[in-house]
Every structure is written in C-alpha cells, then in structure tokens.
Image (cartoon, rainbow, N blue to C red; front, side):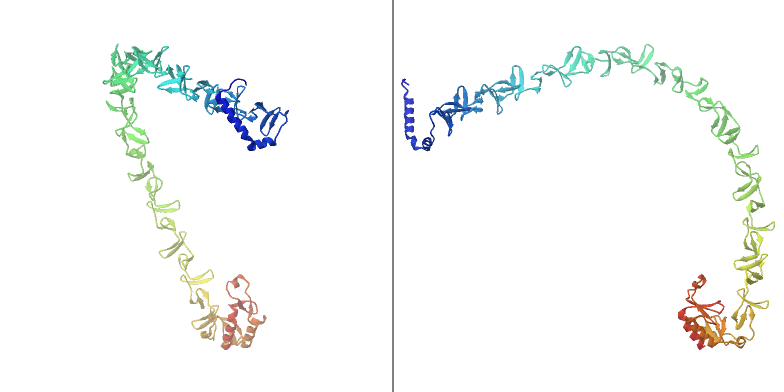
Length: 600
C-alpha cells in the first residue's frame, strides 16, 4: 500500500469514500445496523458472507462471494455467475461447471470454450456449426459423413466409392464401364453386348444369338451348334456339302416344291405323304396304295380304296367289299350288286336296302316279314287283312267292324252296349233290363214288372192295365181323374175330396158315405187328396189339444228324433195311435191346420 496509486484509482477511491460516507442514509445501512455479527462468526447471514466477523471473498458452500456478496467473475480459474459455477455461454465462451468446456451446447460446438472446428461425436463442425465439406479427406453434409451421390459421384462413408453398391460396381465414385478381371461392365453392371467385337452376356464372353449373329464364347460361330449350322455367325441358307439348310437347320419340309427330310430329298412317307426323290408319288408303299402322295380314297382301276387299303363300304352309293362291288349287308343296309336292294330277297322284303314296312305284291310286310298284328289301324295275319275277332276286337277286311258276328253284335270292333237298329244289346248280346229309362226284354221294349215298377212297351205304366190303375208304374192310391183308388183298385161309391179345402198340407173334410162305414164322420187327407186318417170332429179337437198337452188317442204329436225325421226340417209330426208317421208339420202351423180342419 506504500506504492503510489494511479490517479484514476485515487479518483475511484475518492468516489467510493464519498459513497460510503453517504451510505448510512440507505436501508442497507439500516439493516446492517440491525444485524451485527460477532468477530468470531464465519458463515452467511442475511445473504452476506462473513469470515471471522468480516465480509469475506471466497467460496462458501459452493457459492462464490466477493466482499460478502454473491459475485460474478473468475475465482481460482473457476468462472461464477451470481455466485454459482457457470453453465452456458457467456461473452462467447462456453462454460460447464465453471470451466471452459468442449462439447455441444444448443446445437453449437465449442472447443475449450470457444467455437470449434473439427470432428465431435462423428459430426463435423466448422466455427461451431454442423458443416458441409471435406475434412481430412472425408466428405460431410450437414455435419454427418455423406453417403450417396454428390455432383454425379457416389460416396460411401464420405469417400468416393470403389466397390459394389445396390448391384452396381463403382470406381472412384463413377459407375464403371470396361473390363474388370475379364468381365465386361457397362454403367456399373455386368453387361450384355459387344465390346471390341467380342460378345459378352451378363459380363462374360457369351454363347448365343445377338443382333442376328450367333456367337460361341464371344466369337462369331463357324460350324454346327445346337443343331444349327453357322458361317461367321450367320445361319446357313441353301445347300452346303450336299445338305440343304434352312435358317441353319437341316431342312425338314417342303421347299421349292421339294420335300426334304434331315436335309436330303425325301423317299418314303413324310407326314403321311408318300414321296419319291422329294416329289409326291403314286404307287404302293408298305402295302398301301397312294395317289399323288396321299393315301388313296376312291375308285381307281375299278377298285375301291379307303385310306390306301382296298376298302369295304359305300362309295358313290355303291357297296364294295375288299375293293370290289359286292352283295351283302353294310351299316344295316342290304345291297345287291352294290346297290341298295328293293324287293323280296330270301323271303325278306327290302325297300332302299332297309327291311321294309308296307304292301308288296298284295302282301303287307312289317320290318321285312309278313305282318301279323295291327298296323295303321288294320289287322293282318301272314300279311293279309282278316275278317273276324282277334284279341276281342271284330275286324272286317282288316278294319274294325260294326255288325253281328257269331251271335255277338260289335260297334267299331267292340262288343256293343246300347240300342242299335231298335235292338238293345248288353256287352254284345241282346239284353233284358233298363236302359235310358226304357225297359227291354230280350232286346225289345217289354211289358212287365222290373224292380217293383210296372212297364208297358218299355215305359212306366200310367193307366189301367189288367184291371188295375197305375201311376208312373206304381199301383195308385188316391184320387185320379175324379176317382178314388186304393192299391190300384177303384173305391166304389167314393166322393172326390173338395180340393179347395186344401191348406198347409193337411186338411179335413166330411167323410163320404162309404167312408162313414168306418163309423167316422171326419177325415184327414194330404194335399193330393189321399186319405191319411179317419176320425170325427170331436176327436179332432181332442187330437189338437193333445198336440199341446199329452199323448192321447187319434192323431198324436212328437218331436222328430230320427235322421229321417230331422231331414224333413219340421218341428212336429202327426202319427196314428200305432206310432206310424202320418205327416210332418211345423208347430206354428198346427193351430192354423186345426182351425182350417174344423172350419171345413
């Protein structure tokens, strides 16, 4: 302190002393006065660092203090910010834990605290930033080792590639064209094509056809390869050493109208054609006859050939056997001297070679033989139409007949049932019985009783026959033509009923003298005048009352119960004392009937 201080320091000191002189007027000074420490105190009180009671400079609890306060600056080569070791960039210097550091901070590379240039963690930086460029002979892009194409060159691991990538061979980064170890490359791949007039295929000297020329191990072919003959790589055309070539191959086929086989003119059969010195020939070869090279089919020198053999079959409507006109059957057709037969041969009738059906010489044939049976609705025996009964059918000259034959009557061939020529037939015989309402006896309209009914001349009798009166074939009971009949016999001295009294089906009337012989003066009759029951008027009233009270004498009533009763659709009925049904009637009509009966 004995050294003379510079003037600017003295000025600063003076200013500071002036500041200190005024300081007691501030809050800080007031606080300082409030907090006092002992001379032996070392530590931090109220944010001020003391050492043995005095404000100190140094690091305490990892915090840097200067004159007792947290400070920013370098202390013992450690840079602090606000008392703490600096981490980050300050004044373009990168610190880590207070020390100048090397590393990447916020994507910027620092070396010993300053912006760095070089490789860090395999990344290339220039002036702290990821860079693109060449460093130590390696190409980087955006800090990373470059792989790919740059300005037409291929790089791998940052260097120009010499080697294979994705199947392409590169030399110094360029797809290689040229020979490499005897292999031909074009644009980096084994090539197919010509190089120095040598043919390569997939990079190696090739054998095969290329641009119209054939090569063998890279050289133009001369000789026979794969059954093809070449000169200077070109397939030979035409004769060469007495062999005929087509596109380098020994000719097989027709060329200039000459047939070749394996390069020489054909002799023999080629594809089913007969050749001689290469030309289609006519003649026999291997037991087959050929015409203009083809197997003969047709007539040659009166002999029929089929596929080169003497044929059996029909040609131009003529039948041949082993080449000659023949007689016989072929395909179910019969031929005579080669032509389809028409006529009788061996007792068989043919028409156009087929067993015929039809008339020939007044004889009817079926399938070639004399017919027996029904054909075209005509019946034949041994080919002749017949008259008679066959299979229960009657024929006249072969056709179904109508008429009497052997006591049986037929209609259109069948046994007749019906009336024909006023005669009644039943199953072909004259019949007895009822047909269409007419009664027949031995085929003619008859008189007599049939099934309980009486017929006269075939019709139901109405009238007097054999002293009895019939109505529709039944003996009459009742009044007919003003007369009273019972069982067909007229009742003598009887008086017809006054039909004007008829009402509701049952009516009453005064008995006639003959009826009164029954000692009854009143009678019930139906609407046709037939007497149902005799009674007297007094009994009639009783009978009526009985209908509504209980069963008594005379006419009784009952509720229908049997199916026959119910079918009449009536609720009441009159019966006689014996229980015999007299008349059905509705209950509502019984009173009306009685009143009418009594009144009349």
